[in-house]
Image: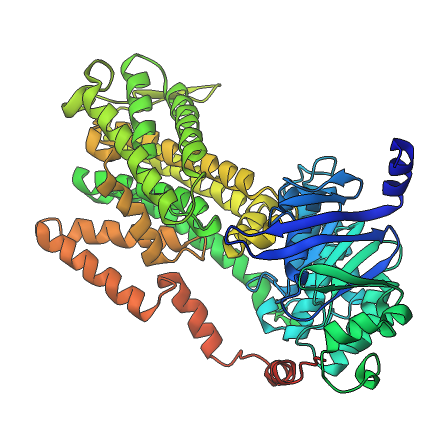
Length: 268
Length: 346
C-alpha cells in the first residue's frame, strides 16, 4: 500500500490491528495473526468463546501487554510501547470488566475526578486550577443526569449496585470525551433491566466516536454493533455485519460448538 | 435526600470549630505563663512533631505510600536551619533554606524510591534516611559529628516594618506556636485542593487513576516533595527550641514516630496525625521517669487502639455517628442482591 493510501486509511480508522501475534514465553500462542479495524464512527463488537483471546487483545490495545508481532495503531499513531495513561491522554477511554470505580468517593466525586484528570492533560484547560472547579461540578452533574446516576449522587460509590458501578465507570470514560472507547464486557453481571438501560446509554455515547466492545450478551451485541469480529483460539475467524456473522457457518461451529441450534444465536 | 442536611446546626459548627481552634492556639501561647521551662520545651517539641506527622500523612494518608525515612527530612531541616543560624543568618533565611534543602533532598528520595512500590518503596526510604543519619554523624566539619550542632538560637525576627526581639526560650516558643499554626493551616489548605483529591484517588486504585490518563508517578513525586518541604520546615522550627541538633534526629527509630502518631490518630482524617502526635507527646511527658516502661505503655496503647478502631482515634467519632442510625437505605441492599443474582449471560 502506498503511503498516501495508508494515510487515508488511518484517517478514518480509530483503531487498526494488523497481524498481531502474542506468544508467551512458554510457547502458548494467545494471539495469532489477529487483524481488525474500527472506523472513527463505528461500534464494533469483539466476540469469541472463553479463552479466545478477547481480553488479551484488549489489554494489548490498552498498552498493558506487549505483543510479539504485528502492529497496533490507535487514533493514527502506533500504540505499541505506549503507557496506558498516555493512550488515555491520546483519546482512548476504557472500562474494566468489574466496574472499577473509587468506592470511598461519591458518585459525583468519581465523575469530577475523571473530568479533572482530563483537565490536567497537556493542552487541557485550566490545568493549574487549585480547588475543585464549579465547571467540573456542573459537567459531572449533567453527565450523571444523562446516565441515570443522579439518584445517589452524593452517596459513596460503594453503595451503588454492580450494574450502576459499570454505568458510572462508563460515564467516567465518556466525561473525558474519548475518540475511541474500549469496553470490556460492559454488560456483564447486570440485571435485565440494567442491561436494557446500558444498551440505550451505549447507543447514545457510541454515536460520533469509535467503540470496540466485548460482550457475551448476544441481544446487546446485535442491538449495538455496526460490525462484529469473531475470535477463536487467538485468530480472527470471521468479520462482518451482524447479519453476516449470524449466518456464518464457521462462527456457528467455533462459537456455539455443539450447543443447540442456530435459533439461540441472536434471538436469546 | 442529601439536601436535607440540617442547616441550623450546620451553620453553627464551623463557627464552633473556629472558636475551638482559636482557644487551642491561645492556650498554647499561654503555656509559658503557667508552667516550667521543661513543659514549654515539651509542648514546643510536640508542635513540631504535629507538623512532622501531618507532613508524613500527605504521602501516607493521601498518597498511600509509606515513607520510613521521614525523620531524616526533619533532621535535614534542623541541620540546615542550625547551620544558617550559627553563621549569623536570620530566622526567615534559615527557615527558607531548611525548606528548600528539605524539598530537594526529598525530591532525590522520591526519584530513587518511587521506582519501586509497596514495601520496597518503604525500605528504600529507610535506607536513604540512614544515609542522611550517617552523613550527619560523619561530616564533622559541617554537622558537628556525633555531638551535633549546639547553641542554635534565634535572637530576633524581622517582620519587615519592625523587628521583634526574642529575649528568652519562652519568646521563641511563642514563635514556634505561631509558625506551627501557619504550617498546619497551609497543609489544611493543601488537603482541600484538587491535587490532593486526585492523590487520594491514586491511593485507592492507582491503576484506575492511570486509566483516567493521570501520570501517577508525577503525582506521587510532587506529593513527596510537598511532604518533605513541611517535614524540613518542622525540623527547622525545632532546631532553635532546644538549641541542639544531633544525628539521632535522623535515625530510623525517629522515623517511626510520625508513622505511629498517624496510625494512632488515624490517617483517614486531616486531624488524625494531630491527635496521635498530641497523645504521644502526653505519654512521653507523663511517663518520662519510667524509662523503658514508657515504650511498653506506648506500644500497649497503640495496640489497643488499633485493635478496637483500626482507623485510629479519629475514626471512632465517625463510627459512633454512623451507629446512631444513619444507616444505608434498604433499597441499596436490595439493588445489590438483584445485581448479584440477575446477571444475564448467553
